[in-house]
Amino acid sequence: MPSLIGPPHALQRHTLVLLVMDVVESVRLMEQDQDNFVRRWQQLVWHAEQEILPRHGGYIVKSMGDGLMLAFASPLRCVQAAYSLLNFCQQTHAHWHPAQQMHLRMGCHLASFVADRRDIYGIDVNLTARLCALAGPGDIVISAKIRDRLVPGLDAEIEDLGECYLRHVTKPVHAYRITPPGMAFAFTAQPVACSALQATFAVTPMAGPQNALPG
Image (cartoon, rainbow, N blue to C red):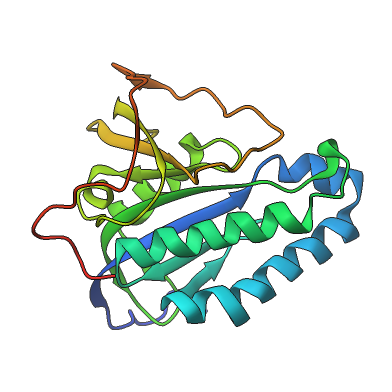
């Protein structure tokens, strides 16, 4: 009987900014109208591929049915692309009934990982997905590594979430929630399971550190 296990593939090591995004309450939306949800999702992915990602130097790592994992060279370009995705989603669904609107949530982290020709692997990959799970509709939750590398000129409302205990992550992760200024959403953000939650808001431009990555 032949073995089901093939030879291992060569691994390549990378450090990039990863962004994981998915659709809030996608199961409910699909149950309401599966074909319509798929068409709207395809429209969003097409716009991301054709317009947003080329403009910000990003690319799709993989699709997860109702979500995407994206990669960027810098935190600033990642957050700018995230803003564009949120804005496109809001504009294209503004005429829909609130219960049928599509809302995105996102997590962003400066990740070190290994990759082969099929997938990417690593603790930081999982951590990025967990940060996404902290976000509410229209939110971008970022790690401290991203926050420390953002540069002046990025307008955002920033909420310090403190030390957050993420599922299957041993040590707490300091996280921040970013919302584009002036962007209102129909839903209330989900509660965040963090210790020492701090409701400290600050409106940028932010004073970036000396080691900020280029935009």
